[in-house]
Length: 367
Image (cartoon, rainbow, N blue to C red; front, side, top):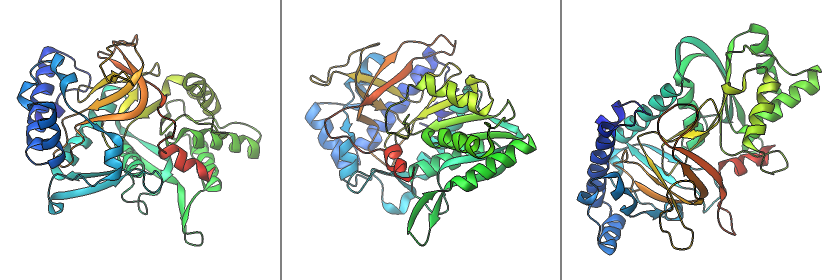
């Protein structure tokens, strides 16, 4: 499996396709012999990992519904082999768990680096100061969003890092430290340093508006500064804000080019990061595949049709979420006009009458 993650994230070719298929067969076989839930699923579906020989065979890979990962502990390996456990930040009864052994942890880190490198978002030569709109990882050690944002701060040389979700011993809960965030932003602006804002988008917008309220103007950051949001495009009124509109507003509020404002979509149950290109489209790296399925028949829909999204990746040896049917609606487009090879993912929203409560909704209670 490891060889796949040494290939460039967006190098789509017959060679990299073969690498993905080989890794997928190996992962499916490994998990299928160890995970009782997959053994039963493969038997019920009449599926064999050896049948995944071409890209056309990928839609035939059986999947688990994401809710199963929120309701059950499905760890494949003994706990003595687990190096890291991550959880989603939904409410009680809605939290997914992801256990990573050392090999899986290495692969997910390598995969994330390759994706950001391929999109021009790594910079080990120049230090960046960070404002992270997420939970302090020293407190929320097992929370997926906190771990991810801490990982992202390693993709540049590091300056100062300020985590805005602070722990209150008095309240026994996290709170949004808007005062500390405004002061950090003012300090970074005055220094003219490179700044990267990371985390939930509603909080980034809130910070710029609060800065203007206090100082009578928006901050003007070094124009090589950047934003990498993740966790859902929600306004403070909990209404969806068009992503393109949000990118423009936040870029203008910070004084940076709109191409420097990117978003990231990911699931703790899946692990592959889908990150914006300069045009604001989520690119699918060669470490995963995404299939839109009809919500009624669950048949694959192909390109440009909205359906329930199935996410597939071979990097996991410790958890059986190699193929997950999510509760997200979206579609896959064949290519992007930015020129980067490979398909792009478009998220349309959550499916169902009762919404699974995601990270952004949980965090929004602090606004």
